[in-house]
Image 1 (tube, rainbow, N blue to C red):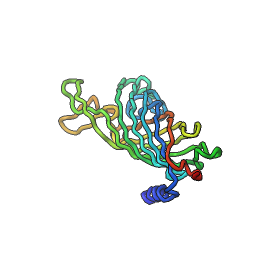
Image 2: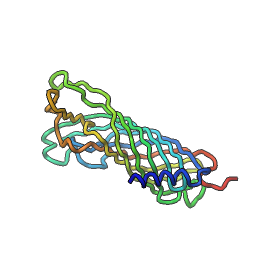
Image 3: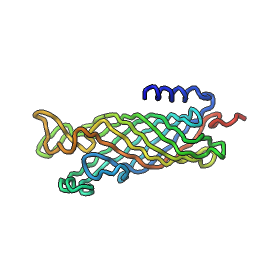
Image 4: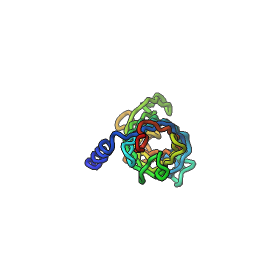
Length: 231
């Protein structure tokens, strides 16, 4: 896997490095959490998400990308798909601020200046750091002190992009993220005297996920544009 990632990065940098294009824009859509509370659907957007995106197209198939995303997360056992969760009756709300970088690979050559190459499906793989709210301690019965925490995640997904005019493009994207924490729903496993039994629920060995689904609108710039012959 490591050698494969190195190969992709090398290809991005060395393939026609003098012909490059930049894309910058905004995106918005819906978000949902998958974890120990509520329904277990991986695609079930029920909250707002939005952010900004930047891409550097290293060649007609490969782009390096960076995103900053704000997403709201919530879930309720009343909407769960099994009776045990419905009976338990937990719910939560949280939010994340995510910074991610990664690779976007187009299925077809993508060139906004070529009428036959102005749209393509694509896949993406990123690494991310994100900030969220977590419980630090219980100050009184069912009264909690919250704090800000940072963790890491691996987003991956699919999309479809197409040019609109000469300098703009639109993309529809679905991105699912595996996180390295189980605390997005305020799950609190802590061995010893600081344990909070009412917040020890679900499976502590299964980390939380979240999914982002939306549309982006980007402006393209740079010279020469997207592998067109200079003129």
